[in-house]
Image 1 (tube, rainbow, N blue to C red):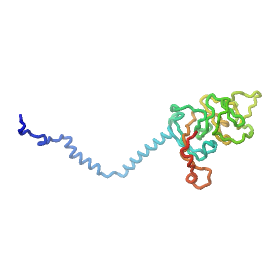
Image 2: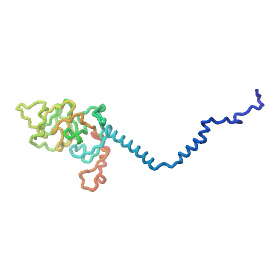
Image 3: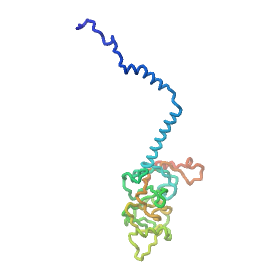
Image 4: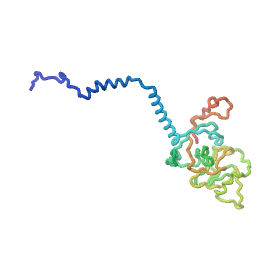
Amino acid sequence: MADGTGGASSNHDHAAPLPASRAAFTDAARADALQRVNRPRRPWAAWLEWAKTFQVAILLSLAVRAVVVEAFKIPSGSMERTLLVGDYLLVNKLAYGAELPFTHARLPKLAPVRRGDVIVFQFPQDPAKNFVKRVVGVAGDTVAMRDGSLVVNGRRPAEAYARQGAAAADAGAEQFGWQRGFLAAVPADGRYLPSRHTWGPLVVPAAHVFVLGDNRDNSLDSRYWGFVPDSLIRGRPLFVYFSYDADSTTTAPWLSRIRWARLGERIE
């Protein structure tokens, strides 16, 4: 047993041999790793990597567009004052339950459709077209119009957003004929002569809504072609993300006639 002054050997006097695995790494493996790092990349490898990234980005974009949010352009003046021709909107597709791609299944609604909501929907007579209007009646409501004033469940709602000219008399048209099957009450004399400014009362059926354009004298809406099935509602507009004066005769109005004050405006 060694004492305090003896010749006990230090741990640093004789280094222990490296394990075979570490020795292998420090020799052949390290040289191979350095060779891989310094090896020039094939030109097509970078393009392949970029293509994979691009494909993933496209798929994510399509998924977001199909389920979460989608852009929509206002093509007509049917929603003036609320929306103008040349407005670009972002539409929340989750609000009323987005339809899953390649299926007829829908996600759960985040909120029910309410009176006063502005919605984007597929036109019932041509689902390839998208319309934007305001909901004025939901399932079970009784809706009517008297001399240009909307009546819902016997009351006249405040409609600060509505734009309407003088309620000039207009003759009933064949396109209003569909209303007869949804009348809450048939006139005593059996005569029903609806017009643009006077019609109803109509009962909104289950799983449907009744919509009008805010620009009442320039809107092709439920008065003419009927109710909107819930299944055709695509979403609720969130805000205007871009806007320009589409009616301008200026060259490239989308650059020179931008409505800066409307950018970011919420849709109410």
